[in-house]
Amino acid sequence: MELQKPKLWTWPFIFLLLANLFTFMSFQMILPNLPPYIESIGASKVQIGLVTTLFSIAAILIRPFIGHILMTQARKWMVMIGSFSLLVMTVLYPFTQVVVILLILRFAHGLAWGWSTTSNGTAAVDIVPRRRVGEGMGYFSLSVTVGMIIAPSLGIYIYQNYTFNTLIWVSAALGIIALGMFSLTKFHTPESVLENRKSPQRFSFMGSLIEKRSWYPAMVTFFATFGYGAIVTYIVIFGNEQGLEGTYLFYLFNALLATASRPMTGKYFDRHGPWKLIMACTTLTFIAMWVLALADSNLDLVIAGALFGLGFGSMMPAFQAWVISKTTTARSGIANGMFYSSIDLGIGLSAFLLGFVYNFVETATLFKLSSALFILVFFLTLNDFRKQTEKWEPLN
Image 1 (spheres, rainbow, N blue to C red):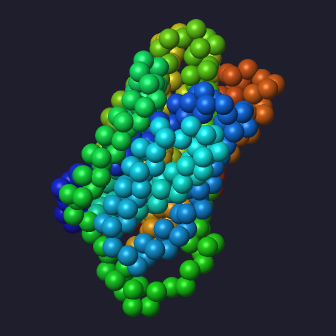
Image 2 (cartoon, rainbow, N blue to C red):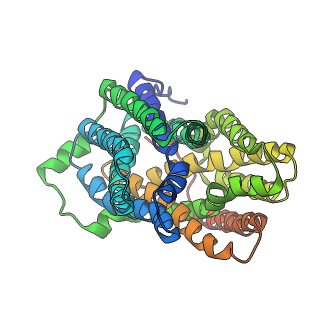
Image 3 (cartoon, rainbow, N blue to C red):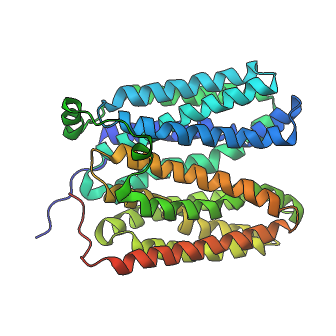
């Protein structure tokens, strides 16, 4: 007889999910506008590239420390500090008219981002019932997906029609809403954290950077986000080259299909595990990349966005749940940090390397080349699936 499912939609989970959505919207609406802004105050091409590079390095460097701290500390104050730090970094941008100072601020912003994302993700894992981690983290990741899709378009519109300062104040307003909702959230701190306080483990940078039990799904996540890097960096440029005014349609249908599929894919994960789900998602994502590369109409963008939403949009929460399922509750903070670092590293390294390739090929070719990463993800997932000797059991 199947046990009754523990309740997922509690007020703490709802508040945390909404607060995380506003956090990502606040951050993502600034992201595409920083390169033109720093260029307008006299940055060189190398310095423009450092806007992303320094941020990613800082986020990756701090996550092991945050993951280690989360092994012994209550969740609420960690989340609140991260949210407040992001708000402070945001409001400082209009006061940085010197390129070097802005780059230093960007590094500090990366530290705050690494702190916040690791703490928020770990807090979500603690609130979600373990038997419904796939479904719960799927909804939590949806707040990330929707923020990443909606906010850049909104930010670009504000920057192009108003001023950079206006953009910052709108972003700060969203950050304030997020901070307020975090303050209203009732967090759960696992018993293992209280036990760890009695005999805290010695800090090891590598030990807190990498969760050995979860390294394989984190590696697969890296390759998937490496493939995604081409979309993040070049889809707007591609749309302009092709004379397509409906680039936003790709983002819109991406969000719609990712949202619509989330309940089904999360429940499937909890019942059957990640492997077949991720392999199906990689197939859809691969097709989406080629539809996009060959697009010559807005309808093609709609189809590509829908397929990408079903594929990549469902794949990422499955990766996070896979990473979490491999580790213990006590080390979920470290596993979460490694998951987000694999995303930052994948997208950041992709943008860096594709920048060199872009000198020799057309933009559409970048999408075709990047699609090969999803073939790799498929076979890496298949390889792990074949090694499973026991039937998947829902987490307790």
